[in-house]
Image (cartoon, rainbow over all chains, first blue to last red):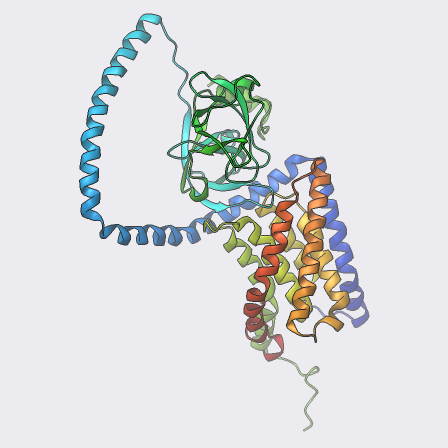
Length: 294
Length: 181
């Protein structure tokens, strides 16, 4: 133990709050001046904590699945009957889908249609809820098989059903996904079959709001909301949700993705149309150029 | 042979280690709790629980065991809270240090009072901190952020404090009691 004289120790204890306050204020100022500072620190902390999160969230997931299994035991027979019926029905649809696929292939071949490039994707487990007062975000464990996690910056996160958000920070082990319900989330979307443009804005609540739709064509209740390629931030046609009018008669989007209980997220990287308006990746221009050519 | 007074007696290594461990309990527990609240537990309003927990702990320990939570630890906890969430780094550090300073200034009068009074004082301080945080975040983002999240934050903090205090009192008398090392 270090022996300090009593007056010195008293002075130290009196000074330390002041000193810490100054340091913290300095931290805020640096973070305000240089956005990368905060991002780097966050990514570093997430990388350190990701394995710990993984260890602790595994039993929670196991317990949840466990209760689910026990609960299902009682209704096993009913479920089996239901699944058999569903399966028969789906088999019919499969035939329809295969016929349509064949027709689509034939038509595409005769039109010399160039399909959109397939995005690369990585699947990761959601290990932490990193939201705050004004933010909705989750931490996704990026599988180490993925070579360069920095390429995940701006990747689009989808769960099994629809768009959940996009990657705003990526480290060596984990990536942070800003959910579509976040206050800062703005996603260009197209509405319904006609594809009327609108902007989906997160409100911090469960259902994002629709703004800037064309005045003559209000969004129709129940219309499908898909991403739009306007602005180049998103590829077109990813399912987002369904239009619904809330109690205040404002159009909102009911997200397809189960945002309250995300377990697994697929992160799709579209390297060729890396958006200009979305987070700037922390990679040098040279790397970015090489990345673009691939 | 006359025994030396307790303060002058040379303590054994194990006793010193015990005392050090007990001293570190509040800070370690605070950090670990923040980590646990980050797990995807799917509790509604989970994002608001973390600042509420941090404010409650900093208030309690500053009131009853200030030596165990010195300002540097509070600052680091605040920074951890900022980095685990998405607030500008340093913001919660400032808020928690200010909260602690306010408690330390009034603890001589506040600590011996009844629980209801300390609870009310906590509510007032938490409200101040949440509103200050709201103002600072609005100022830093240069937009007027909606006011309902800090209001919800205040309500959650106030509602969670009695349960938290009940838990912390046990820790205060048990594992965190440096004097019983």
